[in-house]
Amino acid sequence: MLVAVSAINPLALNIFMPSMPGMVHFFNTDYATVQLTLTLFLASIALSQLFIGPLSDRFGRRPVVVYGTALFLVASVVCIYATSIEMLIAGRILQAFGGCTGMVMGRAIIRDMHGLDKSASMMGYVTMAMVVAPMMAPSMGGYLDGQYGWQASFVLVFVYAAVVLAFGWFLIGETHKGPFRAESPVRMLISYGTLLATLKFLRPALQISFSTGAFFAFLGGAPYVTMELLGGTPVAYGIHFMIASICYMIGNFVTGRMSESWGAERLVGIGLCFGLAGGLWLLANYAMDTLSILTLFGGMGFIAMGNGMSLPSGTAAAISADPTRVGAAAGLSGSMQLTAGAIASFLSGSFLSGSDSALPLIILMFSCAVLAIIVQTGGRWLERQ
Image 1 (cartoon, rainbow, N blue to C red):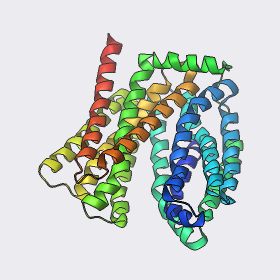
Image 2: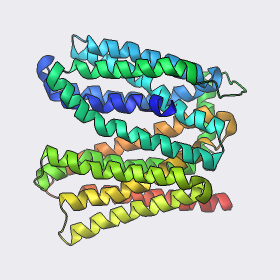
Image 3: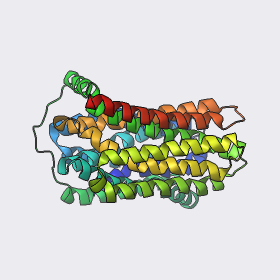
Image 4: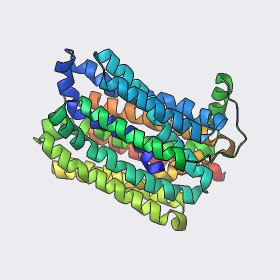
């Protein structure tokens, strides 16, 4: 159930992307305006995670998941019957707020039920399964758009969320055993300040943020590099992107199988080494003038596999920093992670705009990998001190 509820937003994020060009003509607008259905969706996820965690600390995990999924269903209906681009954007913002509850509560519920190493193992399996949704969603969305129009994608996510809510009503119990903390906005800010001042939280939260930044930098710049600089096609991009998805799933599988025996911290270290190796691979191929679509995605494969090991373990460590603020820690770490990814994606697109070289993208990805290692090793040293 946690896999299913956590996959709602990743599915909604990716499934409508093939329909975006058609929406320009349907709503008689421009592509930049249609792009807001994606940009504001991501921004809403980052913002909502700051409130979902504290709400679950106050009212419990189960009510937040149930009411959040119900809000997602209402928002999906708004999107299906949207008569203007403004109405569609509003529906997408509400979708992000509602569906985000599953992403945050999935992490919090796992941590409520298990210790650090077991939590990393469970999160590895959950995130491995979640990769399938965004990997398959564009193909499903493209087919539905061609057969039935762009609204069909939103009908599918509505049906999926309705089924998840029906089963979740019976299968998801309350895991928060108290105390139930009533957080005012001021106390919420104080709670976040306390977490940010706690090295035990800040180290893993920054580590997963920089690791995620490398991946989102790739998402922001790889289409340009693939099609404008390396002569690829959208089809080639889609096929090669499966390399990163499969490698990420392999990393998640290793986490799920080995976390309890190896320990979460060791898996983070191994994952960060894979990320650094991917950055060095890309730099070497650029220096030797052997950069191709295959070597580009091969380097991303190393980074993705490393993220598959470091992200679940780092997330488990971040939300374990303060047992009295598990929900708040889950929300804050997730918000930091997505914000870092959005910034990296923006920088990647900005640096590559008008460029005839893939070097800006490679340097940005390599820098994120190095910063993740610095934060992890430096933070561990400070903790020992």
